[in-house]
Image 1 (cartoon, helix red, strand yellow):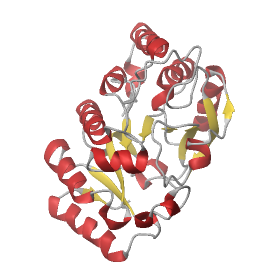
Image 2 (cartoon, one colour):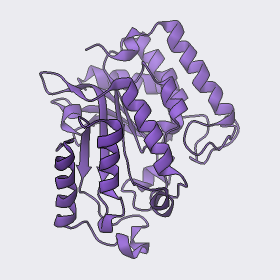
Image 3 (cartoon, rainbow, N blue to C red):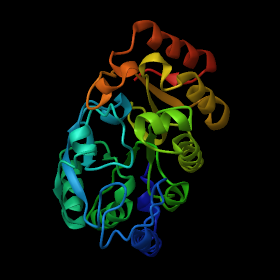
Image 4 (cartoon, rainbow, N blue to C red):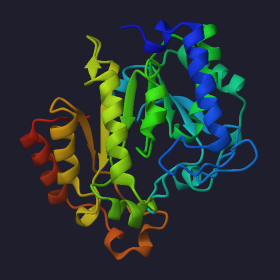
Amino acid sequence: MEPLYLKLSKEMFEDKVVKLWEKLSSCNLCGWQCNVNRFTQKGTCNSGITMKVSSSFPHYGEERPLVGRNGSGTVFLSNCTCKCVYCQNWTISQKGEGKEISVEKVAIAMLGLQEIGCHNINWVSPTHYVPQLMKSLLIAKEQGLNIPIVYNTGGYDCSETIKLLKGIVDIYMPDIKYGSNENGWKYSKIPDYWDVVRKAVKEMHSQVGDLKINDAGIAERGLIIRHLILPHNIAESEKVLEFIAKEISTDSYVNIMDQYHPCYKAPNYEELKRPIMRNEYQEVIDKAKHLGLHQGF
């Protein structure tokens, strides 16, 4: 299956880049809608005009349909639109660990990942750098990039921004962290997470549909949803799964993750001080099975 962005004419691709780049002058790329001029100052995401990249390499710890034999070609972007108090990558997402890199160098990095055999290019935390990444992709496409694009996001994406990615992204992989705005605010410092993530994921699914995996077991197009179980049902997992089944698709692929452990600021919250228990995990798995969702990566 040919990646979507290869089907776009140069003119259509450039038009998308221009529209996204214009957003940076009064930034509304993500749910924050902070309207900051990113050319002169940093937004709520703590990012300005130049991309900051933590690392890029073949990743073997992602979902199996992304990893295959040669790995997922991950580009880890620094900073984040979410402020999760339990973030396991907090030095990158919250402290901004990484180096400022030009769009040209990011294009070179993506081409290098393709050259060593990666099955896809996996943008990790791309939301606040979408215009810059699109410029990089256009450059890389013109120099021979031809593998799928994975949009790996915390889920706090403006649906209008996602609409501009139609015909570009092959695989959307959003988190759905909580089933309410209240917990989104308490644990990720976002006032309207549940409202924003539902609109974004619906738009993602409308573009690429359910996950399609080829005969070699590699994902080529579609939606993968991640959901991290938190102790004491803080993630409101049942509500999240019911939303996916009823408003997205019962054929959705959901990676129900059990790796939570207290880190970063989590020890300051009594309810976050312990890992999840086996029964907490099993209850969520049972619910997903009951709803008919695909799970198990």
